[in-house]
Amino acid sequence: MPSSPKLYKPRTAASQPDPCRRMAAMAACLVIGIGGFIFGSIQNSGYNCKYSNPKSVSVIWDRDGSIISNGYSDMEAKRYKVMGFVGIQTGFASFGRRRSLRQTWFPSDHQELGRLEEATGLVFRFVIGKTTDQSKMSQLRKEIAEYDDFLLLDIQEEYSKLPYKTLAYFKAAYALYDAEFYVKADDDIYLRPDRLSLLLSKERSHSQTYIGCMKKGPVFTDPKLKWYEPLSNLLGKEYFLHAYGPIYALSADVVASLFALRNDSFRMFSNEDVTIGAWMLAMNVKHENIHLLCVPKCTTTSIAVWDIPKCSGLCGPEKKLLELHATDICSKSPTESSEDF
Image (cartoon, rainbow, N blue to C red; front, top):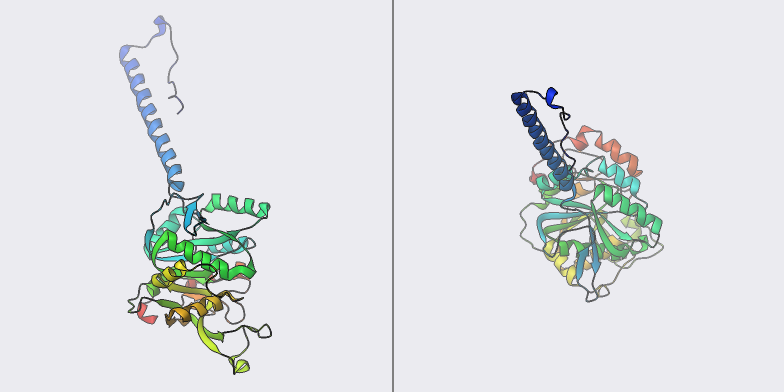
């Protein structure tokens, strides 16, 4: 702490002011000194407050299969109680998407993000794995230092391994947070957190719930078939109901079962949404089909907006996210009753 500024210079005896003036000068010095100390303390506490409770956390798996956290968090061993954890799946090539999201529904400011989480009961984090490319890892570390809004997984970030990343995400989220629901969402959709909160807070009689915009798909994947082919072209195949990949939610009991799985105990399909859907059949969950999770434009009741069926997410998401947020119907329309869900 710098010393208080001196308000006067030493004088000779002939030039000394009278005692009253000397006392007044000393009192002024004391007041300014105390004021400077208080101001400095406020400044320091404000700086420390910003990062006193880190939001980003790095999760690794111990040799015995248990999950431990390290690196960017002070979470220790306790699980934080929340209504829902929302993991925004992202990758190393998606900085532009994250930038657009932070300018729209996902606040970039620590305090604003905290207020959103407090208001909705939902925790929001970007979810990403790791890479051997040290340049990309360096850029990620800079982004973490600036925004502090990540859940980092100890798994290689590869598109071909999305089912493995998804399972790792649910296990990590369950280990860190005691949530009623765990949401998987992609970084190229426009989301209304307030409406998602209403959907998840509904009373449900079934403890094992799988919420999403449901579709039917083949049990066994065929490389000759495209995901967007009409169902009429696929007659004669075996089908089951599962959620579109851009966003879906699993209840705590379902994720607890996933958490207990060994990584090699269930079959992995090439598509992550098909993989999760197949596992849900094995668990005999209750499917909750919510079309408001997959609408192509904002409405007064939409929860998640993306360009279905043209794109698996928004087409040109970096620009489209900003365009949608600029419209009142997307960003400012009031939250409707949960009866609309």
